[in-house]
Image 1: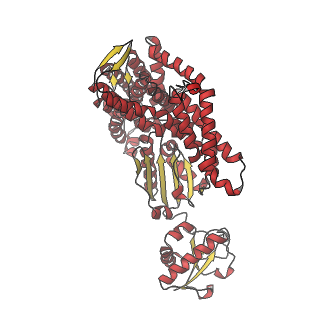
Image 2: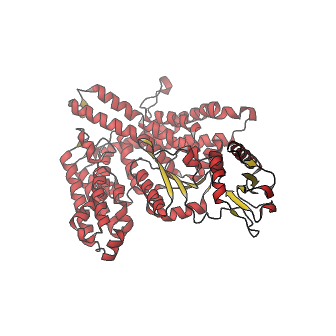
Length: 577
C-alpha cells in the first residue's frame, strides 16, 4: 500500500518532521511504501491541525491524526486505522479535522486527589467514570489517595486519550500528561457538576507542557490560591498526626499515669510515648515544608522544613541562640508561606549568568532562603506567634461550661456546612493543628460533628423510607457506613439534591453534637478513623459522653429531615431507580 504524508499548518516544523519520520519507519516495518506523490497514494495521512497547503489531496482519501502523541505511542496502529477510516477530503474544507470527532467515542483519562485522600478522591473518580459511561465513552481514573496511587494509568492509555481531567484540590505531579490536552478542576465540581465539567473540559482544555522548575513554580502559584497551598501542607501532615495520636493513646492504654504538679504524666510504657512524640514533632515541619513546596516546587521544600522545625522546637541552639520559639502549627503555617514566596522571589529576581543558573535550585536557593527563613523564624515571627499560641492553648485547656459548649457547637456546625468544602476544612485544620500543641478537645467536637451529616441521612432513609426513592434508600445505607468512618462527604448526594432542607438540619445536628461533646469534656487524640479509632483504648475520653453526643445530634438531624422532606413522586422514583 502506498502512503502519502502531509502536515497541518499548526503542527510545527519539529513535531511534524519527527511524526513523519516515525510513520515512515513504521510503514517500512509493515512493508508499506511511503511515496512523495499524492496521485500514487492509496491513503493520505494528515498530521496535526491547521490549514492544508497541499491542494493535490482534494478529492482523495485523507486520514487525520490530530493527536501527535498517539502517533508517537503507536504509529503502526495509526497506519492500520488509516486504511479503514480515511475519508474523502472536500475542497470546501479549510482546516484539518477529524470528520467524526463529534460523534466518535471519546477516550478520557483523569486523576483525582483531595487533602485527606479518602472521600472526595474516590467519590470524584466514581462520578467521572459514571458520567463517561452515560455518554458511551471510554474512561479510566487514577486516584492519588492516602494509600498512594490507585488504578494507575499506563503510558499507552495516556497517549491514546483525547483529553485529561485533573480534579485535584492539592498539588500533584502531572508530568506524565506532558503534551496532552489537560483540564484542571477541583474534586467538588467534578463530583457535584460532573456533566458541566465534562463539557467545559472539551472547551477549555489546553496542552500541558511542564516547564523548568522556576517557571513551573511560578505558573502553579498563579493557578492556586492560599487555601490550596494550606490544603497541600495538611494532606502531607495528616499521616503523621494519625500515627502520633494513636501511638500516644496506645501508650496511655498500656501504661499508667499519675498527676505531678497538676500535670498528668505517664509512668509505664514510655517507649511508645517516645515514638508518638517523635511523630508529633514532625507534624509542623511537614506542614510548613509542603506549604512552601506547593508554592515554589522542590526548591521551597528545604526552607519550609527548617522553618517548621524551628516553629515546633521549644529551644534552638545554645548561648545567645537559646531562644524559645514554640510557635506551633500557627507559626508553621506562617513560615511555610514565607519560605515559599521568598523562594519564588529569589528564583525569579536573582540575576545570575547562564552558566550558573543550574546552581540556583541545588545550591543558591537552599542556602539563601533557608538561612533567611531560619533567622526570620527565630528573631521576627517566633516570639509573637509563640505568645499567641500560649494564650490560645491556655484558654482552650481551661474553658468549661458555656464557653466550651459554644466552641464545640461552632466547630460541629462548621463541619456540617459544606461537608468537605472550605468551611469544613477550616474547622478540621483548626482541630488537627491543635493536636500538635497537645490540645485534644477541639478535635473531639470536629470529628463528632463531622460524622453527623451522613449518619443523619442514613437515619432519615430508615425512618421515612416512603419519602425516598429506592436509589436514595440504598445511598442511605452507604451513608451510615461512611458516617461511622468520619467521611462527611457521604451526605453530599442528599445535600446536592435537596440543599435547603438537608444542610440546615445537618448544621443543627452537628452543632448539638459538638456542644455536647465539649460539655462532657471529650478529648480526641487522632484526627481520623471515626468510631473505628475507638478500637485503641485511650483515643477518646470519656467514651460514653462522646458516643452519646454523636447519637443525639445524628438522630435529631435525621428525624428533622425525615419530617420536612417532601415525598418523591412515583414518576421521580421510577426515573431515579
